[in-house]
Length: 84
Image (cartoon, rainbow, N blue to C red; front, top):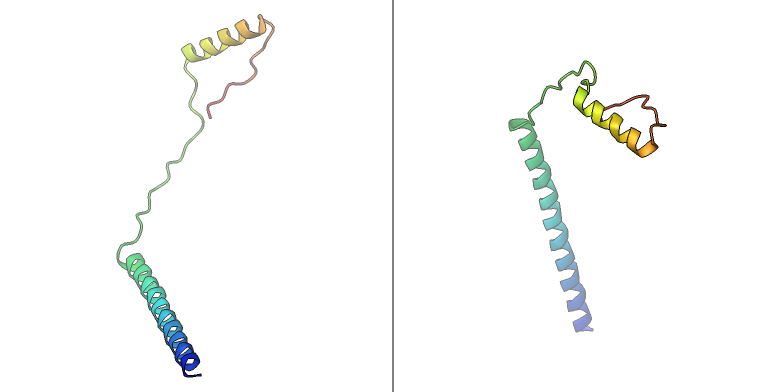
């Protein structure tokens, strides 16, 4: 019976120790996050406003047209070309 009591006591002490250490880690992590956000905030990068898509150069448009003509035997028609 004495061995069982010793085992239970050791288990309770061990689980309490692990629980206390995990609480310390959690609260120190929260403190670290708070301090970093307060004293070293993330830089805000301004977003560039784009008026519209840039026009496709004439030589690239000619190459696309030639490729479509070759693949479709001059039966294909280009309706719209967009940059992605």
